[in-house]
Amino acid sequence: MLDLKNIHSVYFIGIGGIGMSALARYFRFLDIPVAGYDKTETPLTRELASTGILIHYQDDMDLVPASFLDPKNTLIVYTPAVAISHSEYQYFTNHGFVIKKRSEVLGLITKDSFCFAVAGTHGKTTTSCILAHLLKETGTPLTAFLGGISEDFNSNFLLEGTDFSVVEADEFDRSFLHLSPNVACVTSMDADHLDIYGSAQELTASFVAFTKRIKPGGKLFVRKGLPLEGITYGIEDGSDFCIRNIKIEQGTYVFDLVTPDTVLSGVRFYKPGRHNLLNGLVAFAMALEAGCPPHRLAEALATFKGVQRRFSYQIKTPEFVFIDDYAHHPTEIDAVFDAITEMHPNKKILAVFQPHLFTRTRDFVDDFAKSLSRFSNVLLLDIYPAREIPIQGVDSQWLLGKMTSPNKKTIKKEQLITEIMGHSPEVLVTMGAGDIGLAVENIKNTLVYAN
Image (cartoon, rainbow, N blue to C red; front, side):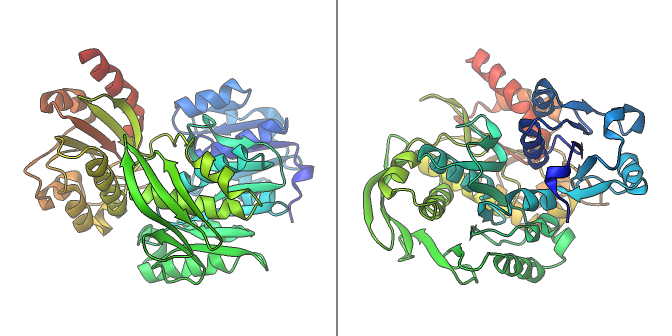
């Protein structure tokens, strides 16, 4: 088995990915030399580079620093999003380097800590960020590897100690089967990644296999209604951990939090959406397993700021609201719609959506059409391909034709700001897991200037 103590340098293929970059920060924090490749320069890769990490953007072995070319001293970490035909991957494979998936390295790093793992097809990032925030606020020594940029830490990595660890248990490519958590949760098990699993049944079987990875004596928290045995959590439904008597006061949830042992009244949580309430609830329940006092955890819930691109308010005034969200699955789009209409009722909403992956669009096109049609006004961007090649007949125009929204159209990214200005919405929401997030700052600045 690989001993991380013997690693003298680490090279990442796909270093700009949100999970990969958290690992890169970890090794850099340990003062281990780090370098890597990514296809595109982004604010995240520029930030990594500012810490002394060497990054290049062409698949070219001549650009790999010479100090990373000794197979005895260098660990190669790659993401499944990189094709095996990638020439750097091929070089390292053929020259005797130790090559590990991101998830394998994460499993090795966390195996000797008390590990909290957050699984689910939706809600992983927000839940793990809330959990890390709760543990930090209660003085728990932890290391957290997050799948998004926490607005509380302004990072996807936190190192406050090594006794406890917080990780996202990613179901893509069955990555979570490399983890061995002490405490885990499953937030949701909707069909997704069917290009990997083939069927919803296989996806469910993989989640079941993940739950069997929990260490002896460990605990599993599951959202009530999922076909798994564990400690349940829910809203107004008699779960082991439950939220009751919800009120909204000035855009903030106020509620009672019921545990098997006590009732905490007047708990506050400001992130909109019932799905986020559930995320906060299970993070609270998991944090109790670290011995944190319930009343301190409740106080910490009220100070959670959020996660970038998870129902993130970019502009919030009485006249106009701009929200950006990572939603890329029909269930997530529904959750965004429900949160907007609960917090901003009777407002004119314009939704901008960038579909992510040809296979996901193909597999769930009718569900996407139904979810997007809940918005009266929709602008559809082209499908973001990520790791995929186009599929004939699968495009945004096909999806548009299945939608029933009264005001809908497909547009190119360069038309986006002009189209938004022409609609004059009271609430604007941008959604998608592709590069739409890179356009948010420009949209925000233009709208602020215009108003």
